[in-house]
Image 1 (tube, rainbow, N blue to C red):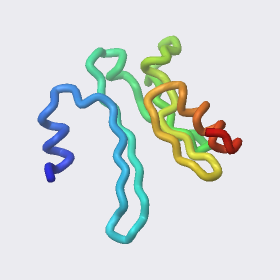
Image 2: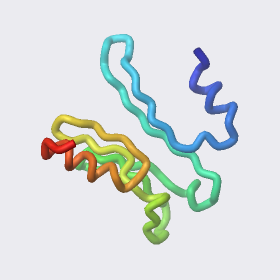
Image 3: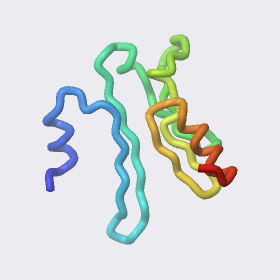
Length: 100
């Protein structure tokens, strides 16, 4: 199996990614990463809110752009939802409400 650093280094633009694994002690671990080609996309940051939401947003005061500013992950009562767009919150809400 190729190592993650080798896979990412082989691509000029790896894009966004979700990693999900089980550690040696059996703990589940999830991670989200993003890269950018344009200066505006490169100016994004990841930040975790107090509501256990991982948000992708500009590091400066640019206007909201749904392609570059979105919820990347949201933890709800029973679920951890990862994605690359505005649908993450909708999916988490529906799962919490018992709808699929």
